[in-house]
Image (cartoon, rainbow, N blue to C red):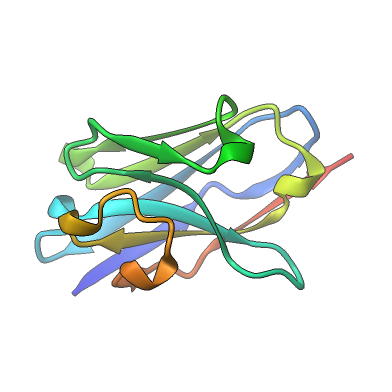
Length: 125
C-alpha cells in the first residue's frame, strides 16, 4: 500500500503561481511513477503531468506545457507540481497518483494504483 497526501492548493489570481506537494508513504513508495491529475466541476478527470521514479523523465498535457513543472525529491518521498501563469481554466481539484514503473508517463488514470484525496486550486480572473 502507498498513501498519498496532497497539499499546497489555494486561491490565487490569474497569472499567479502555486506549488503543490504530494507526500508519499508506505512500502516502496519511492519506486513508483507518479502523476498529477485534475478534475474541474462537471468535467471528467484529466491528466496533467507525470514523472518517472528516477525523476529523469517527465510528461505533460499540452495545455500546461511551459507553465507547469513536475519534479520529485526521492529522499523526501515527495512529488511537486510547480504551476505558473495560472489561468481560470486551471481551477480544479488536483490529485496525485502512483503507478507501477512499467506504466511511466501514462495519461490514463486507470493505470494508477493509488490516489490521494486531492487539493483544491482556484484561480480568480
